[in-house]
Length: 119
Image 1 (tube, rainbow, N blue to C red):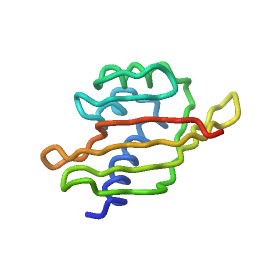
Image 2: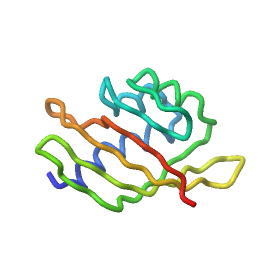
Image 3: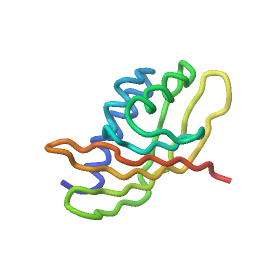
Image 4: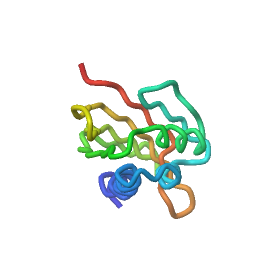
């Protein structure tokens, strides 16, 4: 499977869960020990990811565009994306997102997630 297809398989699940405001389903896209850096202090693990997304406003949506990919090993894929988070009550926020996906058994999951704001 190509790096882009691997990324889309995970990020489409992530986007669907974000758009549905389903924090537990968002967290299920991550490894048990994932390092997660949103726009707030970092957290590690699925519980922290779920708490982060539970605190996001209802109506939050995510639209992503894959900019770069690298296959670092058979079971590791790096992705660099541009993501637009939409809100119901304020302008959209565009960020850069770096993710490291790890294959565990037959599934790909996010092991590292780091957001940075565009200038």
